[in-house]
Length: 176
Image 1: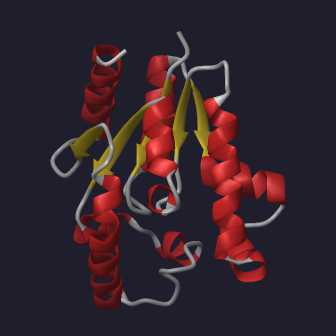
Image 2: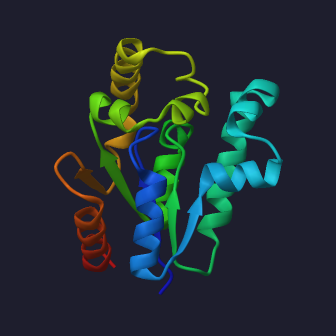
């Protein structure tokens, strides 16, 4: 049986790093949506936003979701932070797979982001620590209703990556 697991959550919450570990643990193929789009477009997400616009980028994400929905491989997909907020992406991902919301607070995410991590994210570029947390708190509140549509919500605050991989692997198996 083909399985699709979509990791959703705010930028910097650990979707990509955790996704790689989860894919290794489950034997599924890992797909980082941002990385896949960057490879196909030959440009960074930041450059795509700047030169093609957010609308173009969101349509590209949606096309990739449709492609992944047709895949005959079992997948762990790390979505971009904005994917769930556009169109009916959450509904579509819920339809074709299991969605898992990796929930963290703005302060937790801010502490995880390196200076490079901030620079490569268009909406976070140039913000100091205080402004970063304030921006993220507001932006996360706007996105929460979309993220909350996930089939599974995992509070990542007190868990190590090893514990998270174990919990999510168990969740996937229980909900086949």
